[in-house]
Image (cartoon, rainbow, N blue to C red; front, side, top):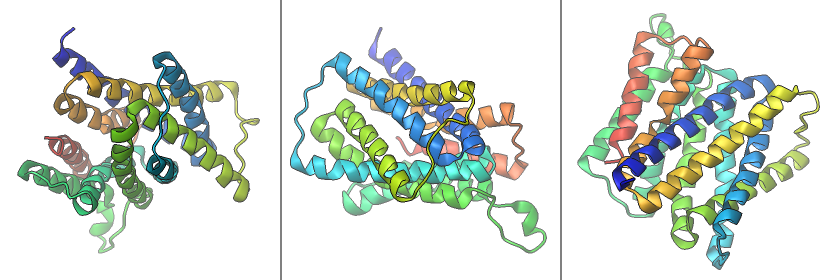
Length: 289
């Protein structure tokens, strides 16, 4: 199989894996709350990642500054998804998923400010498309006619989530360059589990699933394994394939999340919001060139 086909398949795997994870996250955030759904799915993903690491027999040689950075990466990743899932819990899954596309804007902004990376003209255009699309998708336009400005439910939480994801991807890039994609994923995932356990203890948050039916428990575990698999396949693809093909395809995960929400949750979006969702998705693809 040639490099181009492998790159395309890796990107598609990431798009569907992350898209399904976000959709299921939205479903279970409404059913059992964002904290439980995130914790148990990440625990399952951590175990799946550990099994992958054992198969690949990775060597563990971690520099001191990575030991300092990876707990921070775990915390901001956790914060990002907890805000994201909270948005799912109270809002329209399609609109919240579209708003989360702002993570690309924050990622590039922080890279521009702190890592001195620069944007091309087409990437700048992509960012403007994302901002415009999110604006169209996130505003409750029916209230504009009544001379009221109001964000749709869950949008504020999604913006906070996107902000933390923007921080995370820059930290993750630094760590990955030092220890590789698999060890980075493993460290961050176990860091997430430890952080969530500590947070639940200090905040006295209930994380047990005793009152949850067996089918839901299996679905949450599957959800975590799917996300871990998406991370593994995409990162593996990046080591042997072409990032210019993989990244834009995988970044279009909102297409899967929104499509599933419209089909299975019967999410309702206006024509203006639909235009915004499409514009934001196209914009995130444009930023990768």
